[in-house]
Image (cartoon, rainbow, N blue to C red; front, side):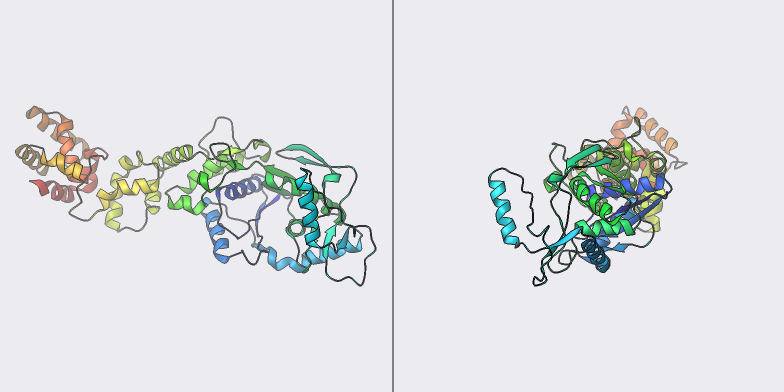
Length: 454
C-alpha cells in the first residue's frame, strides 16, 4: 500500500506553529515510508479565505522545507463532487432532509446547557417519509443510535464512544453547500489518503466521519490525532503566549533548519538526540512515537537551538540569510563571521553584531566606547598604532604577538591595549577578539579606523 498523507489548511489566516508541526509530521511520515505528501487548501469559507493567506501558508511550508507532492487540491473546486456524494447517501437511506428551524434547535440547545446537560439533537424528520411539499432544509447524515464506535488511533490508542453521543451531522446546508464534515471525508477518499494526521481537537470529528466511510462502502484511513501545543504555563496556545506565524519566526531571525528541528522535538523524540537533521528525521520518524501529552512552546529552548544552528552553519549559507550586501561586504564578513556566530542566538542579533564589518566609514562610536577612548593615554595609543602600521604581516597570531610585546615593553597587560583598540575598530565595547577583527577588516580599513584617534 502506498502511504499518502495530506496537510489541509484553511486560508483564513497565516501558517502558525501548530499547523506547521502538523504539516511536518505528515511530511515526515510520508517520506519515511516512501509515500506521497499532498496539500489541500480548504477554502470553502469564501468570505474569510484570502489568496494572501494561501500564499503565506505555502511560503511558510517551503521555508521549512516541507514541499508537497503533486498539484494543490482546492476544496472549493470540488463542491459538485461533495453534493454528488450527499445525494448518493440520500438514495441509500443514510441521509435525510431536515426542516427543523435553526432557531428552534438553538432554543433547545440553550435549555439543555442551562441544565448542565449535553445537547444531542434528534430530528423529527429522521424517520419520516420525505414531504414533497417541503423545499430547502438541510441534509443530515443518519448516524447509528445504538452500539459504540471505536478508533484505534496511532497516537491516542484505542478510543471508544457510545453512538448515542453522535448526533446527525449536517452534510448540506439549506443553500445546498457542503459542510466541512462531508467535504473532508470525500476529499480524503478521492485523494487516496491512507493516514489522516491532525490535531487531537479533531478526534471527535473522526467518530462521525468514520460512519460516512462505512455508509459509502469506502475503506477508512488510519487516524493519528496529535496533542495540541500549549504555552509554557500549560494553557492552550494563544496569542498571549506568542503564538506567531511561521514567517514571523523567519523575520525574527530563526533559521529554517532550527525551526524544523524544534517543531520535530515538540512531542516526538529519538532517544536522547536533540540535534536532528532533516535526513535523520525522515529516516527515524514514526507517528507511533508521538507523545500523548501536549507539547509546550519554550522560546528559551527554541532560541538556544537556533544559536546552535547559527554556530554550526556554513558561512556562505549564513550570509545568504542576512539580506543584500555588496561583494566587498560579503568578503569582509566571511573572514570575521566565525567569531560573531559563536555569540549570536538569532540572525537579527548576528547582523546587528556584524555592523562594524559592514558599516561605511567613519563608523559610529557609542558613548561608552568613546569614554574609553578619551580616557586612554594618547601617546601610548599613537605608539601602538604606529607599531601595528609597521607590522610585517597581517596574520592574526603575528598581530597578537606584536601587541603583546608592546604591552610588556610598556608595563601593561594585553587586555589594556585590546580594551581601547576594540571600540576604535568596532564602535562598541563588546566584540570578538580584536586579533580576529584586524585580519577580517584588512590592513587598509583597520589602519584607517585606528588612525582616526591619533
